[in-house]
Length: 114
Length: 110
Image (cartoon, rainbow over all chains, first blue to last red; front, side, top):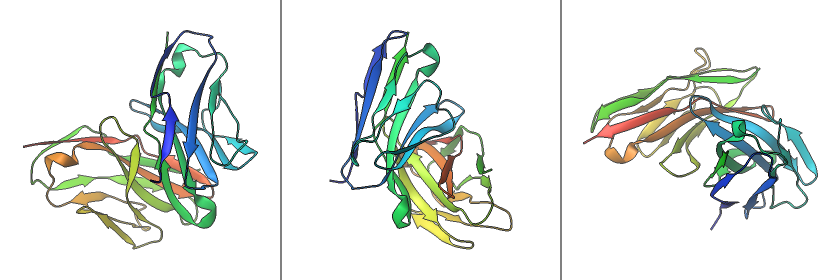
């Protein structure tokens, strides 16, 4: 089954404790992206990757890091989380480079930073 | 730059009512336009899309027409069901840039 998986689904952590949210897709998509969803703001892009070893900032990259060492994985790293990073996070992938603009989304990770 | 503006919610309708959710966009050139739906506790999934002017996207009884002259892509359904209750996002893709609207929450009451 074609899918995007994220782990963990729920995470409660404390300020400053490094964490990683994993994302994996099994569709051989070149493009992957991270979004955060906040009430009234819709989805805002954090980082995206057009292919392996190619990453770029989205609209709200501050406080986040990503890496793309393999095509299927695109982890999101919060080196020193702060309460304003409490949000719902989505990973997505797509075949943009092959002219298909549909994005496939993971189920989401709800992060709470206290 | 690219942007999407959609009508604010929440929207509450009775079953079998007509639905319209307005969406307008700003973009240079010819963006592709999308409607995504998010059911409770799930990620977004594509509902329909249109890639050029005057195209009509349709799926599950929902329709939207790409209107370049009014830069709009309004979502419509003739008769909503309780199962259509969800959050709907208008989105565009243009020059490697993906933009989403703020989302409109729809609640359909029996």
